[in-house]
Amino acid sequence: MLSLARPIFPDDDGSADPRLGTALATYEQSRELPAVLQALPGVRLLVPVVAVRGDDIAPAAGDKGDDMAAVLLTGADGRTALLAFSNLRSLLTWKAEARPVPVLTQQVAAAAKAEGATAIVLDVAGPVAVVVEESDLLHLAAGDTLVRTRAGLAWARQGA
Image (tube, rainbow, N blue to C red; front, top):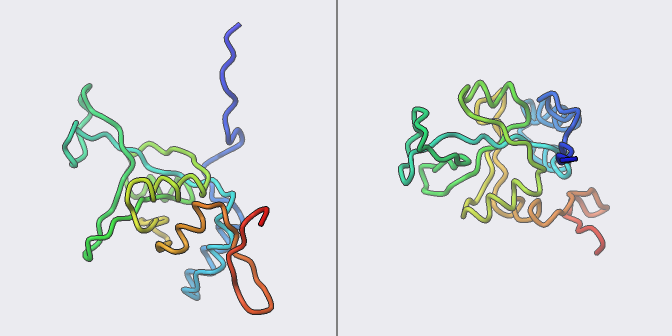
């Protein structure tokens, strides 16, 4: 009998992880990033995938020859960021045609690095957008966790 793989997130209803949701609400008020960075490890994010025409960078209209691609955003300074969302509502507000791909934060950060991006933009459509810059991106890709120490905040590596 054919056996299909079990879903990675079987009970996922598209909502933000509660801890990340709380951290994002705090960030909206304070603009302090550490709570978000502490909440991200191990969390499911949604990476939008959109149809594109072959080598074109413009989204396609649904041709059978279309390819699917994750979305990179280019800033005014020329740096690129991979888009990710904490919840389905924010993703669909950004682009209703986008397909959500559930991925763990560490994999999102590693994919951003592999694509040459220097950041992740989380929830670009709001209610509050958060930019995870290059040094934090590298730590998230490595699976590190931001912890509070007597000296302040520090990235800790599992098993180190």
